[in-house]
Length: 155
Image (tube, rainbow, N blue to C red; front, side):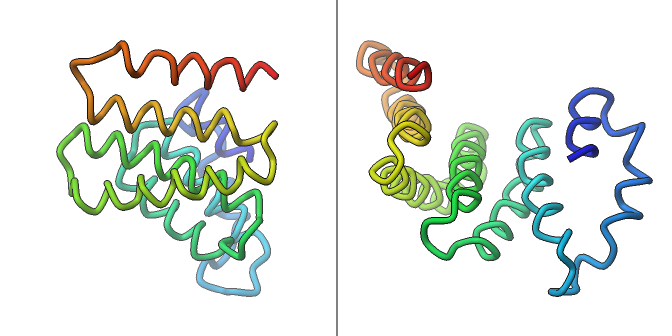
Protein backbone atom coordinates (compact mmCIF):
# COMPACT_ATOMS: atom_id res chain seq x y z
CA UNK A 1 0.00 0.00 0.00
CA UNK A 2 2.83 2.37 0.86
CA UNK A 3 4.32 1.96 -2.63
CA UNK A 4 0.95 2.71 -4.25
CA UNK A 5 0.49 5.92 -2.24
CA UNK A 6 4.08 6.93 -2.88
CA UNK A 7 3.70 6.30 -6.61
CA UNK A 8 0.72 8.60 -6.76
CA UNK A 9 2.45 11.32 -4.71
CA UNK A 10 6.09 11.27 -5.80
CA UNK A 11 6.30 8.69 -8.62
CA UNK A 12 7.54 6.06 -6.17
CA UNK A 13 10.90 7.64 -5.45
CA UNK A 14 10.59 7.30 -1.69
CA UNK A 15 9.55 3.64 -1.35
CA UNK A 16 10.12 1.72 -4.57
CA UNK A 17 13.38 0.05 -3.46
CA UNK A 18 12.09 -0.68 0.03
CA UNK A 19 8.78 -2.13 -1.23
CA UNK A 20 10.30 -4.44 -3.81
CA UNK A 21 12.64 -5.84 -1.15
CA UNK A 22 9.71 -6.54 1.22
CA UNK A 23 7.48 -8.40 -1.23
CA UNK A 24 9.78 -11.36 -1.79
CA UNK A 25 9.39 -13.91 -4.57
CA UNK A 26 6.22 -13.10 -6.55
CA UNK A 27 6.28 -16.51 -8.23
CA UNK A 28 5.94 -18.36 -4.93
CA UNK A 29 2.24 -19.28 -4.46
CA UNK A 30 2.79 -19.47 -0.68
CA UNK A 31 3.86 -15.82 -0.58
CA UNK A 32 1.00 -14.07 1.23
CA UNK A 33 2.09 -10.62 0.05
CA UNK A 34 1.88 -11.63 -3.62
CA UNK A 35 -1.87 -11.13 -3.91
CA UNK A 36 -1.78 -7.69 -2.28
CA UNK A 37 1.18 -6.64 -4.42
CA UNK A 38 -0.56 -7.69 -7.65
CA UNK A 39 -3.86 -6.05 -6.65
CA UNK A 40 -2.29 -2.72 -5.70
CA UNK A 41 0.00 -2.80 -8.73
CA UNK A 42 -3.06 -3.00 -11.00
CA UNK A 43 -4.68 -0.03 -9.29
CA UNK A 44 -1.44 1.97 -9.22
CA UNK A 45 -0.78 1.34 -12.92
CA UNK A 46 -4.34 2.40 -13.77
CA UNK A 47 -4.01 5.74 -11.97
CA UNK A 48 -0.56 6.38 -13.43
CA UNK A 49 -1.87 5.69 -16.94
CA UNK A 50 0.29 2.62 -17.56
CA UNK A 51 -2.40 0.81 -19.52
CA UNK A 52 -0.38 -2.22 -20.57
CA UNK A 53 0.88 -2.88 -17.04
CA UNK A 54 -2.61 -2.32 -15.64
CA UNK A 55 -3.98 -4.94 -18.02
CA UNK A 56 -1.20 -7.35 -17.05
CA UNK A 57 -1.75 -6.99 -13.30
CA UNK A 58 -5.53 -6.75 -13.70
CA UNK A 59 -5.65 -10.11 -15.48
CA UNK A 60 -3.43 -11.61 -12.80
CA UNK A 61 -5.88 -10.29 -10.18
CA UNK A 62 -8.82 -11.88 -11.94
CA UNK A 63 -6.96 -15.19 -12.14
CA UNK A 64 -6.04 -15.03 -8.45
CA UNK A 65 -9.29 -13.74 -6.97
CA UNK A 66 -12.09 -14.80 -9.28
CA UNK A 67 -13.94 -17.25 -7.10
CA UNK A 68 -17.31 -15.60 -7.49
CA UNK A 69 -18.34 -13.01 -4.98
CA UNK A 70 -14.95 -11.77 -3.80
CA UNK A 71 -15.02 -7.98 -3.57
CA UNK A 72 -11.39 -7.73 -4.63
CA UNK A 73 -12.11 -9.52 -7.90
CA UNK A 74 -15.01 -7.18 -8.68
CA UNK A 75 -12.89 -4.09 -8.00
CA UNK A 76 -10.11 -5.49 -10.20
CA UNK A 77 -12.69 -6.20 -12.92
CA UNK A 78 -13.93 -2.59 -12.65
CA UNK A 79 -10.44 -1.14 -13.13
CA UNK A 80 -9.70 -3.60 -15.91
CA UNK A 81 -12.88 -2.47 -17.69
CA UNK A 82 -12.02 1.22 -17.39
CA UNK A 83 -8.46 0.52 -18.50
CA UNK A 84 -9.70 -1.39 -21.55
CA UNK A 85 -11.91 1.52 -22.57
CA UNK A 86 -8.87 3.75 -22.41
CA UNK A 87 -7.02 1.31 -24.68
CA UNK A 88 -9.98 1.23 -27.09
CA UNK A 89 -9.81 5.02 -27.31
CA UNK A 90 -6.14 4.65 -28.22
CA UNK A 91 -7.09 2.07 -30.91
CA UNK A 92 -5.10 -0.67 -29.17
CA UNK A 93 -6.33 -4.25 -29.59
CA UNK A 94 -9.91 -3.05 -29.93
CA UNK A 95 -11.64 -6.44 -30.27
CA UNK A 96 -9.86 -7.94 -27.26
CA UNK A 97 -10.57 -4.88 -25.15
CA UNK A 98 -14.23 -4.80 -26.17
CA UNK A 99 -14.58 -8.31 -24.79
CA UNK A 100 -12.87 -7.26 -21.54
CA UNK A 101 -15.30 -4.34 -21.25
CA UNK A 102 -18.28 -6.63 -21.88
CA UNK A 103 -17.10 -9.01 -19.16
CA UNK A 104 -16.43 -6.12 -16.75
CA UNK A 105 -19.92 -4.68 -17.27
CA UNK A 106 -21.48 -8.11 -16.68
CA UNK A 107 -19.39 -8.56 -13.51
CA UNK A 108 -20.38 -5.11 -12.23
CA UNK A 109 -24.04 -5.87 -12.92
CA UNK A 110 -23.72 -9.07 -10.91
CA UNK A 111 -21.91 -7.22 -8.11
CA UNK A 112 -24.50 -4.41 -8.10
CA UNK A 113 -27.30 -6.97 -7.85
CA UNK A 114 -25.63 -8.37 -4.74
CA UNK A 115 -24.41 -5.11 -3.20
CA UNK A 116 -26.21 -2.13 -4.68
CA UNK A 117 -24.72 0.48 -2.35
CA UNK A 118 -21.17 -0.59 -3.17
CA UNK A 119 -21.25 -1.38 -6.89
CA UNK A 120 -24.18 0.31 -8.62
CA UNK A 121 -22.19 3.52 -9.17
CA UNK A 122 -19.33 1.51 -10.71
CA UNK A 123 -21.76 -0.42 -12.92
CA UNK A 124 -23.38 2.80 -14.13
CA UNK A 125 -20.01 4.43 -14.75
CA UNK A 126 -18.89 1.50 -16.90
CA UNK A 127 -22.18 1.65 -18.80
CA UNK A 128 -21.78 5.38 -19.37
CA UNK A 129 -18.18 5.02 -20.54
CA UNK A 130 -19.15 2.18 -22.86
CA UNK A 131 -22.03 4.15 -24.34
CA UNK A 132 -19.73 7.15 -24.68
CA UNK A 133 -17.35 5.05 -26.78
CA UNK A 134 -20.16 3.91 -29.04
CA UNK A 135 -22.04 7.23 -29.30
CA UNK A 136 -19.28 9.82 -29.36
CA UNK A 137 -21.41 12.41 -31.13
CA UNK A 138 -24.50 12.13 -28.94
CA UNK A 139 -23.78 13.36 -25.39
CA UNK A 140 -27.50 13.68 -24.65
CA UNK A 141 -27.82 9.90 -24.31
CA UNK A 142 -24.68 9.53 -22.19
CA UNK A 143 -25.07 12.36 -19.66
CA UNK A 144 -28.00 10.80 -17.77
CA UNK A 145 -25.93 7.66 -17.15
CA UNK A 146 -23.04 9.71 -15.77
CA UNK A 147 -25.50 11.60 -13.55
CA UNK A 148 -26.99 8.30 -12.31
CA UNK A 149 -23.50 7.07 -11.50
CA UNK A 150 -22.72 10.21 -9.52
CA UNK A 151 -26.03 10.08 -7.67
CA UNK A 152 -25.63 6.41 -6.75
CA UNK A 153 -22.09 7.13 -5.48
CA UNK A 154 -23.48 9.80 -3.15
CA UNK A 155 -25.84 7.34 -1.46
